[in-house]
Length: 593
Image (cartoon, rainbow, N blue to C red):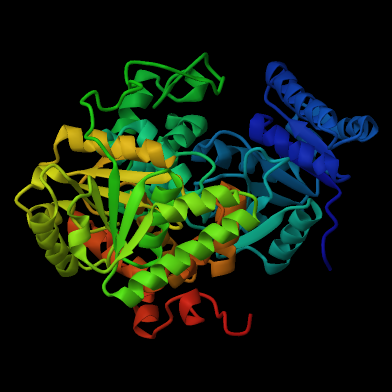
């Protein structure tokens, strides 16, 4: 017979605990909110009162409902008041011994049939549960901050959790309007295990001075649609908290990718904890305030003081989706553009595709017909590479094959005028390998657009050890003309976005392969818990599993990091021809959709 949770205790009324208490009371449960002393209790009461006032102000809660909600919460400094509670949720600081001592005390106070839950985000639920005489009635209920808003709840079972307890807690989560995902007891669970590996990698990238904090954050926001960049998110979480979570995950997994980057410990020791201390990766107006203010690391408005070269005519080599998108962006920005394809038929097809895209833009009200006609008048379609001879910038967007690109750059070196900037749109291959195919490696640069190019704002500008400063300036000026946001990075596999994105996707595949959670559960956790626009398996099926595997292999060969080795499950799916949406089947089957 299922339990009817009516009275719930919440121990710890910090931001998270107060949010959990509010969620419970909002859904009709009687709540005992417990803190250790009067001052902490008052702070907890103030948290709940402030949150409910905001909900009333935004029209999400009526004044009457807010008053009833507050009436259902009893604030107390006595654990003994939880003697008759049906469920007790712990939300105290992330210290194992502290939690174990609390559960031992609760075990003495509460009825034998009461269920205990920990809101830990990284500690072992099993180790906490065995501090009681009822480990089978102990679960993890990991809410996400802010608890009244975030829909995801990770429900963590141990090897001894009783099935009926798990089912009852899952039912309670649904009653609270949450989307529960049931998982096993593993450090980081789903969301943190995937999120913090990615955040750790971003911190390492910054520590190595591969790219600026602004460019790393902009790349992940604009290139992946994430709500925040990784370094800004770390400042919000708190660098001390991030260090503790990563350290806990590393101690359990022994995965080097979870070993906290040295910069975490240095900043933690220096008191640079992020927003709450007023300074972390960024500097803030004052502690606890999200407003970023300039500091000594803030880049100057002019990234490249060396003036760029004149740009009057552009050549785009290629006739695929990316090449068409780049050509379209160029002509819409007012630049005379020649698109060069292999053969007249491919050139005509590419032009027709651009014409259709511009017509759709007019239909959607994003472009007027006069501008459409003007853009098409600037576009020349050609099948002769010699037509790039008088262009100031030549952008290569052919197949992602180094031999093909190298051969093309040898030809461009013969065809193009002196001083022309030669750019490759490669997403993973070494730009320097294209550059050395020419007698002008100083004029070669990576210009990685994102698909679809007319929509995506990000461009990664990739410098090699030979790229001239005025070439970088030229590309940045071109990006400005095209309405794109350019970020600078060095010539190594993955650049910024793919180097951070694909190890995260690979970790998700490993998690599925280990039967820790389902693809649906993992996707739900990352969308609802982290605000990602797509879950990892949805994204992999869109990108193409063969494309993902190729990028992961390049990353592994470049960094020789064992954790970057592609998951065998991904390799097997590609071998079987399950390549994602384009094949009708990947991690999901699309043939019946």
